Image 1: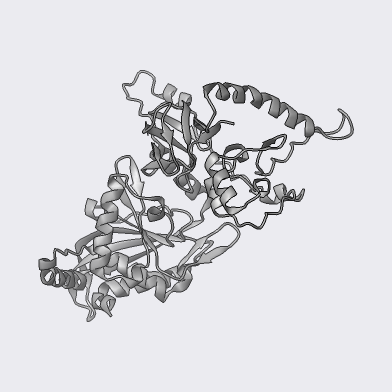
Image 2 (image 1 turned 90 degrees about the horizontal axis):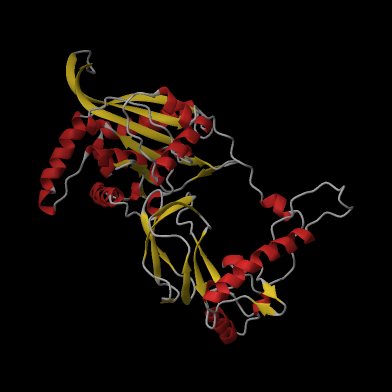
Length: 440
């Protein structure tokens, strides 16, 4: 039976994507691991690999198509002995299969019985009589390992058994018992709270009738940014803690380090020190090193710090993992690499997912202070402003001038309370005003 190739979910947050480019054409023979297409997600352009072998029988979605939902069929793969005519036969059989499934799901008690949706079938291999739907490669591997295909659950389209299913299976048969009746109910996740809606697109357009404007279509990244930040402001109870930090000691220390490391091509930025300070503060105040997980919190052991990077059309938050264990020069080099690849949309999902907190620095744009929106599931985000020369009162009461930087910590009150957030911010300030302690 022909196999549908489905639009993959290339990251945990991906709901749809753009099929940017096909790297195969109809009639091409492919093997497991071959690159089939390039797919643009909301964050990056990624290669999509074949998980099975066969011949590309039909391409269903043209290159350049955007808004393709995850799990939408994008092509059809033919196995040995199958032809294009089998695609039409398979399509014709689909309505009959649906009708048969509907008949089996009819409630007992006649037409007066209340109708209820039938639970989704378990992902068992589909069969027609004694036939088990499996790819030729999966059948060969199963034969070599002595596996009973009827006892293996297929993960391919429509329950088809593919290579990965048999490679990870042992000769011991899997239990083929049906899932308990209550399992579907337990697996059902509660729907997210409906987001408040503003005026419709048509209503907004009518407000500007007669005015000259250009309509700008939203790409995947902007749609995702809009949805996630709307959700964040509606569902996360934000509160804000503000501190000022004097940077003169840090600026002098940084200049001295950069002179000494110039021959190695190392040039530390103020942001590198802020990343290190936040990572060490998470270790010093471990209760702040936590994220919200719906019905619980997850308290992290390492300090994984995300940093917002502006890119065309949106932003990325690449994550520097184990930042508390890395030197300032290592953090600097890693941040430059992640930021460069972020701007070219070349980051892999694992490089921008995770972290307990984020840093957003707009100081280089001249912004003195601002409030940042928490990026869920993070527990906090630190908004960093520009360092400015200001009059300050010294320790002995004398009036002097210092370089002062404003910081605002946006906190998820479900994860971090006020006193705890204040303790964390105090630790960050102490590290930045005494930068040599970051080398201890």
